[in-house]
Length: 387
Image (tube, rainbow, N blue to C red; front, side):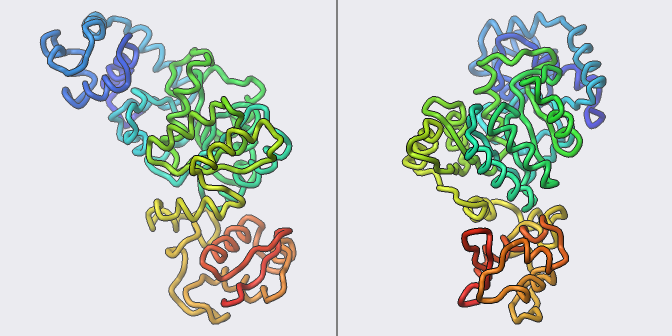
């Protein structure tokens, strides 16, 4: 909270507390006046000049006096180790500013970079064993590629996605449909604490806000807004995950779906998405080839996903390796020299390479995306025929 003057912060929080004033109106006001302080100090005549602003909202801004609540909110943020980032704060995530109605203020526990490669993994609260398995596989593989995994910390698919990313040593972001001090579901308290240590827990709702049903569709626009793409694992015909997918499309994001059994009610929503043009996902490869072009070259090479960084053209050295391949790193070259025309199980590759499992998976995906390695059923790999 130190990045913004304390008085500016007070006025920003106050503006978020004004009744009958939506996020779109706040954005319009900030554009017109430049700061929350100038908005709340403006005269009724000045406020009336702002287009599409209701008389009730103007009266509420003029009459606002609940500074005790504002100061209490700041104190609670200090107690919980939470940063409050109003719209216009220098640390406010860039991608959220591109959606139609960005939150007036974000409450963040942990670290939330201005912009990072992130993919949402969402689905049913009533996850099947297959759904959990596929969630853990996709979230783990994304984390191994240095991609942050975003979800809603709900039961089922969301919880599985967060834990899988954490266990892979990656970053995960949880977006809540309640206040930061109202952990829901309550059995996810340990998950809440773990995410805050290495990732971020985010909400737009003030402290003490209960998890009302109406809050979750609002939360979903933040999940999709922060993401480069949205992977739907399992979803019934009326699942909230379909709302997130629709919001993602409206925001110009990629939508992915994992197919399931035709007899499973939890697959009907995902199959509908596939019929409507969502990209079918069989492995993390299907996600990476769509989102890699959206990631700046400098971000692809950041630490955290093995020596190769995020798989892509910028992850190579430009030199000829000992195996005769152009533009591969030393670590990739080590794997290429282990592989032949006959398939080799991934556990053998890990044992022979001397690298940890996370790095091997990252390197293999990089090589696979560049057409040098082929993956076969049973998590086996071999050199591509033309490689």
